[in-house]
Structure formats: C-alpha cells, structure tokens
Length: 189
Image 1 (spheres, helix red, strand yellow):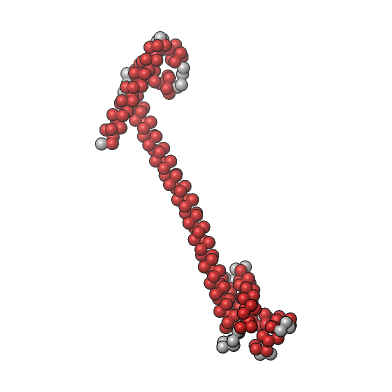
Image 2: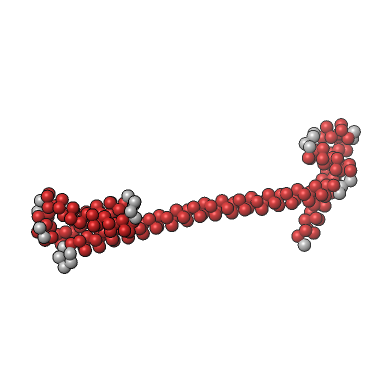
C-alpha cells in the first residue's frame, strides 16, 4: 500500500492502517532519536512516540510535497534538539547551583582559615607580650585569666589581699593590652 492510501485509511479510523503507519516508520525514527540522544537513552523511545502524536494531529494537513518519512524525521529531530536544549539548561542550572554552593562553601572555608590564622597570630603575640611582663603580672594573669581561678583562689595562692589582687590584675591587664596594641601597630607598619 502506498503512503497516500495508508494515510487515508489511517485517518478514516482503520486501526490496522494506523498500526501499519506506526510500524512503517517507528524503527527508522527510533534510530534517529538514538543518534541524537544516545543508544541507552530512555527518552529516545519517548521522542518517537511524541513524533507520532504531533504527526497524527497534523496529518490531515500534510501536502505530500515531501515523503512522509522526511516530514516525520524532521519532527523527531526537532524534538530531540528541544530535549537536548532542555537538558543543557538543566545541567547549566545545576552546575550554577553547585558552583554557588561550593563557591560559597569555599569562600566560607577560606574566611574561617583566615580567621583561624589571625587568631593564632594574635594568640602568639599575646603570649609573647605576656612573657615580657613582670613576674607578678604574669602570675596574676596566668592564674585568673588563663587557668580560670577565682579571685579568692588567686589571693590565697599568691598570699595577697583580695583587693590587691583585683587592682593589680586590672593594671596588669591594661599593661598587657597596651603592649599588644603597640606590637600590632608596629606589625602593620
């Protein structure tokens, strides 16, 4: 049966002609779809089915200026290109999301590393300046601020009145603060 007769019968509702129409072009269209989408792509079969759906809607207006297969193949190729563009947009969006997530994480990690380095640098400077204080100041700051003992415990250990511990500790902290600030200014240039 020629194409024109097959199409007339299929359009008139002849189920056998409709099945023949699909069978005649199905395998060739499937090869077109896998050519574009890949041999194992599960959507290749969907592209062929969509081709037949679109063709069936427009079959009555087909003018036979070209072969039916050429027309069907063009529909299938366009559907495959549309699918590939869709996938490309999806991948690009996922890539951008991933890059943003990783970029944000990478920037956060770098910021944390920079903060940690600054912390260690300042801690080293603080300990260096602490060592340059007089022995009594070092003892007061060590017992109270570094070891966390109460004022009463510092007073007992150093055998100093509580008021003396409190006032001396305030002066020692201020001296340490001034030394650290001076060292930071010198380090900055």
